[in-house]
View (cartoon, rainbow, N blue to C red):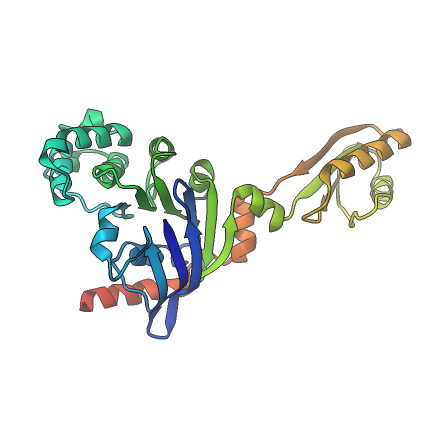
Length: 331
């Protein structure tokens, strides 16, 4: 469906996208994740034919996005971060206009527009002026626009950006309901939205690929899981019990009254079940009272910070955005 090989997009000496490669198969919902300025929007603009690549190859539907741009665009629905809709048109009127531009046959237009409004959750707003609906509804009108030609591929750039929690939840639900009907690439820096919607995550930072896999795979292969053990004993006894287990590192220890909390980072491939059973057996043999023995999986936020090394201010990549805007103005 999408194949990106060694993609480079440069503005002068600065590489906004730097030798990026990935594949997306039909039917996948893939989260495209990264800090602000990581190169997500630039990559999407190349995928959709709005920008040309400096080097590398990008194919969608097994066609080159540059030489077969019209054919590629006819098969994808694109929701940009800032939806360019006409505020003085009614929702249904606007979507019919967009359907005509996208080549939807007149005989099918009414049904296609109705279906798109229903799937995007804007059917009840169809007679309202676009300029009079909330930002959340405008985003959903943009989603309906992306759906109106029933394309096999949807590319959604920051679909929940700037929305309040209720609006974000409704937009996420609308996207989830498209599962199985479309291949979806969804760009966002909002981690909860990616985690709630996507089957797989592609994470980029400073224009380069940093991770590619399901959340479970990223947790197992990249992030640090921790073991938490809480015992009614002093710190020295807790530390000694931990030391008896082969492969356990030095734990972090904190006291809460009579309770000793021991927390240790686990090796990525460590057998969790065997480790928990060994610890439980030692605790029982020592006759120590315990109230917690559990493995704590890292959140997507923790994985994100680990892979981007906490550098999320986007100060460097902001220069690429300025350069891109200057290039577009000159074009």
